[in-house]
Image (cartoon, rainbow, N blue to C red; front, top):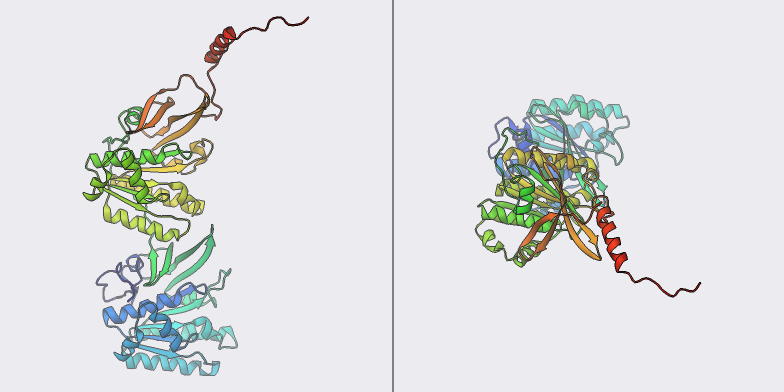
Length: 505
């Protein structure tokens, strides 16, 4: 059966729930009764699936008979395709809750008869829902486009309103075209929904556009959706939440030296960006942040887009941290997703669902870089902004990581303006050895230590030490000894160097 888990349990009598997960809540429970809804989309975008869920939900959940009038697909093909999604329309036919009308071979002269047949079946079945698939195919039966538009305006519009049947009118949207089928149907309809799909950064992205929706509080919106074995699933946007409360409470990052540099730690509800090259200790910092939260009885959700939960647990155990105990008592939850091989919309929807269900006090996302690669720049910025605003509004302290190359600066990572605290971890070559450096670039509203500190990763985790005194130009990428140290070094090395004697004149 089509999934209906996110639809309101009992929509009002004036609403027709679609049963499409994630959609009904956006339109106040369903379509207004008796409305004519235009559902346009690319070939293969899921128009038939959406329409079938609409009919199946009405029949199985609310006992509302429905009719599928097809000018594009015959009955056998329709029933076969629906069985693959566990929607058994044949059983509904036997219960007089569903009727499939095949108009595939209808010509212009028979359009009037086809419409009369639909009206007769509405009366006979006492139908509450109707799908016409599709207006694009029906229009091809007319020699003139104007005739098809007249039928749409004077017949279909009037027919649905008089009979109080909620009607979905399917229309093909050609690939690369901005037009929604014939052109006039979008103006006659009470609502316009558009399903499109495109290849973005090597990933198939599906977009669900609410272009028009009369009689509901829904506004124009672009959402993403997926086609699953249970039908269409719409992924609502993560809404931005204005912060209604300012937190003065400090929290610990789990790294004592970093807390000292922040004059006691970041404020609760802050979003902390830890950036650095591979191997600088970003994940270790994130794990310490998580473990400190657990030690303080704070629930931490750790979402990794790069490493599996087993790998993260192994790293934590390597430091002697009792992570399994915290997982068992519910203070730590680790979830791993890998954006690149899969649908980024599904992954982000699952992440949002975890946040809603687990209700963490602390949140880790490791890393933003993997998310950025799978999204356009504008979309990535919107996602991070909404996530940051939600956490701030709910008092969730978040730590996110990002991978940089060649010691990149915050200005190179353009969501840095959204962050409350920015910590940069670096590797410095000195005397044929790698040393680690830490610097805080930003700490909104906090007095901070801006010196560049050396740190090490020892068997207990990250330990911040004193500031560098024997190296400068660390941030410039060309670390060197300070001039005074260099002069002393050269003086002493020169004094110790044996002089050449006995040279020939």
